[in-house]
Length: 171
Image 1 (cartoon, rainbow, N blue to C red):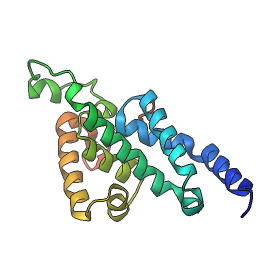
Image 2: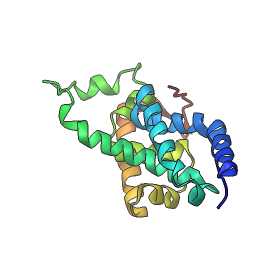
Image 3: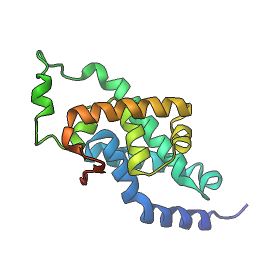
Image 4: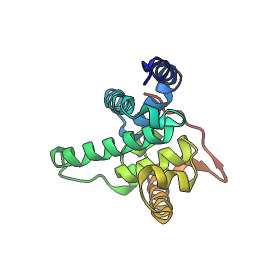
């Protein structure tokens, strides 16, 4: 068995090249720059032990770990979330011009947010998204439909006619 130097070098090169994209994906999932960094760091630590197996194409494996870790964290902490006494009127939400896409994404359920991020930011197909999330393609389709409907309600100016509005989201 070799010393592992070529694997270590390939891992370091991969991290140097793709870390930023992974952090962006994680940020879009969780809406918190520090948590995004933690999610990516955790996924990369887990990847080291599997690098020989995943090293030829680590991106899907890492995305799946990031998404699953985020959803697990959300489930662990959802009972600790602060609940508001009164929900704002729908018209107030729909008319809010300062509600941007990042804020709207944060208002989606974690699985819906994961589908939107993987499909539209990572440009994965429905089949690839289903594989990353470990669900059926039909689940991806229904989560996508529901998430887009929610986003349209939250950010009505998101789509102008047939042309999607251009928005940037960065940590």
